[in-house]
Length: 455
Picture: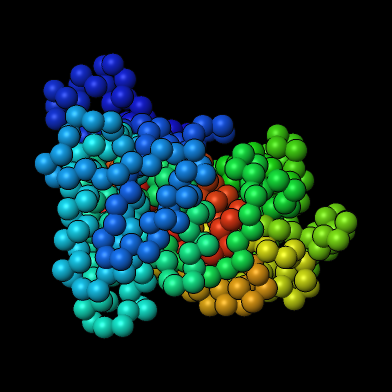
């Protein structure tokens, strides 16, 4: 599936027509391909406040083969080399006056940003501020980053990373993710890091090499894309879906060299059956079972709340939320997760912003976010992580069946002016599943092109 309008406006005829009519012209996004460089151009790194992470950032970029440039002034050379990315280290802000340095660095730099460029701002978490003035300055970074994302054009994005004292070793993975093509449809987002034991020596081409990844709802759509990206990155995928989807599930598993497991995740014995499968098939050589679990399976049973019967409500809660709770608890209690395990749950933009006619769905997806946040400390104690991904409007076979007007409005109401693709969700999940993402825990990352709905 693809966003037909984006393809059209970037064709010869489409470019002419949209120019004449003054229609929006969404860009073709820079998406990840194995073997490509991290960025198509150099990075300029600047600072505001104390900038305690600047050396760390520079080292990460140079280790990734990226050229690091010094900032230009507002009246400096505007005809020089274009930037592939702009990185602002805004750690150490003490009050609103320090934000002037952010403006002085960003304003001239943004004029030189290439198409599909990246802006990443690093800052201290507002919650850890020592004074109201410091909290105000730190929180201002959120508004700054989101607004930059809305101002950028040509497929460029802006995101923020909040780095508390002691979490400096966790910076590399989120920084390179936000700079890469993997984050093509992630815009205006912020991730707060935690101190963690981050392994070194990760293979950037196959970061999931040797891992066993369970993906529920893998027979089609976003689930199939997740399975494909996981396999591309080196994981052996256990593709799970209901027996009725057995043929499609087998095709997905066979195409990626994975294993198909037919399982109704709402069945009373589903958690135990999954545990037994993992221990029987994937526990050799000191392994316990799974390294990665992706809770992707989900259903919709839409109806206005006043007209919704109990069956619609209960079925959505059972698949979208209760099954995730039951399976995760069973995996933890049975010790079927390997050390350093990664669990990623699929939430939704609806769980953040709400949606008319989807009270059951929105409630279940909001519940997923609460589940992830509450479980993060227990996972951290085990050296593991649990996070959520919240997709916005993603172009799938399901959205293709929506009324034309509803579909097009949903696809355009974001900073990138287009619908995302299943691979965009899959890339974010695959990143959160990497060993290097050990410092990202209890977070929810929206994959929505910075939708205008919700926060």
